[in-house]
Amino acid sequence: MKKPVVAGVIFVLIVLGVIVYSTLTLAKHRVEVCIAFNGRTNCKTASATTEEFAQQAAVTNACGEIAFGVTETVACEHTPPVKITRLK
Image (tube, rainbow, N blue to C red; front, side, top):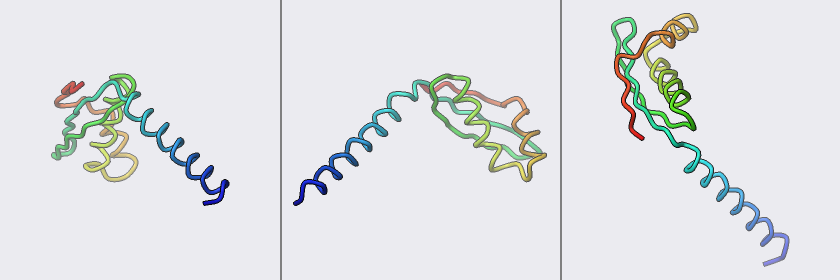
């Protein structure tokens, strides 16, 4: 193999390694959030660097499946969760 090809493969492997490492080490908090909105309920799990970010991400993901349109999504995201479970 030529040197530029080997260098390119090594570079890609290093970048992938950094991405995997940062993904695994940054997510220190993991929560499951259940949201009830307009007669529908959905539970989602999310991980993040802080518990607040993880909770907000889980709420956003849960509302994405049970709210339709921008107005409902905003209203859903401001609805207090029915259940919050700290997993990590």
